[in-house]
Amino acid sequence: MGFNARIVLPAPHSGGQDKFVHWNEKTGVSQCLVAPAGTKVGKSFGCSLWIAKEVLLNPNQFAVWVAPTYSKAKIGYRYLKSMLDIPGVARCVDGKLEINLSNGSTIKFLHGRDAEVTIEGEGVDLFVIDESGKIDKQVWFSLFTTITQTGGIGIITGTPRGFNWYYDVYNKAVNGDPFFDHLTLRTIDNPYNDPEAIARAKRLLPPMLFDQYYLAKFTSSSTIWGSLEDIWDETIVLPDQNIRFWVHPEAEQRGKEVHHGIDLAKKRDYTVIFSTNQLGRVVGYARFKSVPYPQQAKRIENYMKKFFSHTEDNFIRFDCTGIGEAVGDLIYDLNIDASITPVTFTNASKADMVTRLTLAIEQKWLKAPRIKTFEHELATYEVKVTKSGLHSYNASHGEHDDTVCAAMLSVPAAYQSSMSMEANEMLKSIEDDPYGDIVDNKIYEFDDFFEDDESEEEFELEGTYG
Image (cartoon, helix red, strand yellow):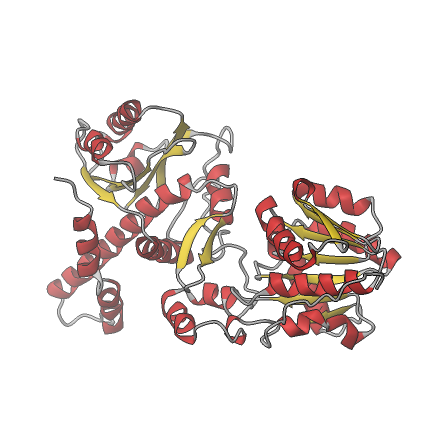
């Protein structure tokens, strides 16, 4: 190898990391291993072991590690630095995320637009594409054209995320294309993951999310909400999809019961008001930033008075997490006719709101104008799994989630109110015609929906001021 040192790499676990390390030795023909992986399987560490082995055994290799963001690229860099940062073996350049070995090999860690540009100008011998479901297809195309000329080999991995280029190459692999090999790593395959945590996830997560994040299955949607195709009301033409303020032009739609979700700005974030009526129509939206709290409260008051003063019933739910009692009092002191409820965002409360918003989307109940910010935030919102197996819902790194948070405060409440209204109408029809042809199972559906009302009420009371 050209090194006067004995280098011992960490041992991979037997749940798939070991297959990463030696995949190319066993195939001998394929240039790409396509490896969809569940959460917490150790895929990034396994890929790091493979690249470390290859650059140590083979001099003058040019390797690239491609990730969607800087922070993701840095994970791979830290792993490989811990293995290779040995005097006389390698020099690690933190500022460039680059490792140069004394045998002439180099590893670069790339993200975003830089990945595509760098790959096009280099002869790549080894590569890893991490979090492939979040990588633009053009990056893969650039890399593909390079390795077909150089004979380079590598790994395409990450949690599945919709039917995209990642799904396409996986299909080619499982259908016998010799250019590709394939491997699926489920969360349960990692011997260090707690089976009870996985079972809990199966109970709490929607089936689509569990299949993606734990079974490494490709599902039809690239978002945690399922398909978003049916929620857009294309009859509403916006002057600009980047619009920051909009109210429904029909006073009748704004006159029905409306549930307003408000996510208050903290530091560099945006304040967002998101209004949904009882029929599932988004009827109002406002987004602004860098405004002091008293002025934010005044804008909310003006919004409500000017556009929703004739509404049948107004309900406001606002995120009171971390804003302090004084800011909560500003909301309570608004001179408007509305029922106001503070909500503390926790992993548990977010999970409940995500489930209910997903249900409203799946049932095609929600209809919204195609506001670009809302569409983008829905697409980039994701679930993350902590080392202890708990779930947290947040925007992808570097993205905002203010509009989604406001929508989660608005839509589930409006949807639940709609279900309550429909159930009441059904019960009234039974009272009026007790021998009518009402399907009993329909009533049971409503019973199931409201079976957790008591816990919801306790949650809201915990956050009530005064």
